[in-house]
Length: 365
Image 1 (cartoon, rainbow, N blue to C red):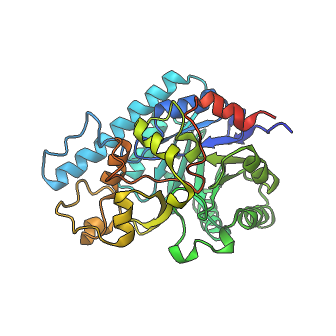
Image 2 (cartoon, rainbow, N blue to C red):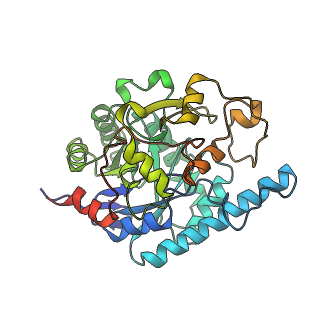
Image 3 (cartoon, helix red, strand yellow):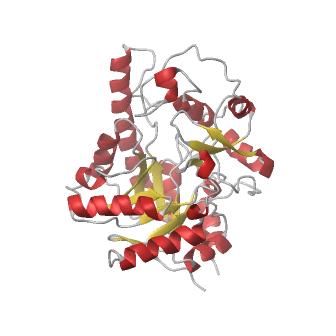
């Protein structure tokens, strides 16, 4: 059985594979372009791009000035990533993943469209105003992330009522197996409503019976190999989103120590932790995560660096930790004090592969 193509709006990918958006600077221009060149859809994560960029100095300015500088640095760094990705993949499908929960959300979306992004994937909150921000770019595909039929209904009804349109595709993320921030409360992570074999058919039925529409669904969370892809397609999905598997590739933009850490991981290292965003996250155990799990994090001496999130326990009450800096430390190769997000299959990779080889493994019959 040959895998089908994937059409999202006006864009057709040769393979039904979207590379997941992973921040900070894990899925950047190099990874996105390599996936796009191999026939999939490459995604740049817009999360925190400005932090290590030439456009931001964390030691200058008062808090408000530093916040504004950071938002502008993110915008300029995103332009750089999109430019590089397009130079590396002139004809591939390149998109961004941007968090609703992030400050500067609207500016990042508009900047991406002005600089050639083909699609916008948006989660970590409900992207209820996304069509408003993208109205001047009708060829750009809009793809919200949901975890259940309930969330799908909220987004579709809002978009249809207020903007007269529906999503071009919908990523259905299973919080029981996805990496990073999860779209469910800790106590609900094992709820049957989030299982792919329930959520995907339910959403298909809603779209068909209530809206008389067929919208491509993208299964996300726990997709590792071709067998997982075929299972998702058999449930009615049109494609899959894969994140963790692409970390152990040559083109992944992260430090090699981050990749090695994933190679060395064991199943028992995968844990659920709390995040200052107010959502649980799936991560790999290391000394930093062990402190988080034991609730033995020392009360932070530093204050919020750049006010990067709309909701943050670290900023508002100095609880937990600064997730921006924790993710950044890991991306720089600090496996002791950094936060390493991962999906439920982390540790299954045996070696670092070129993206082209991984895509061939995932798609060849």
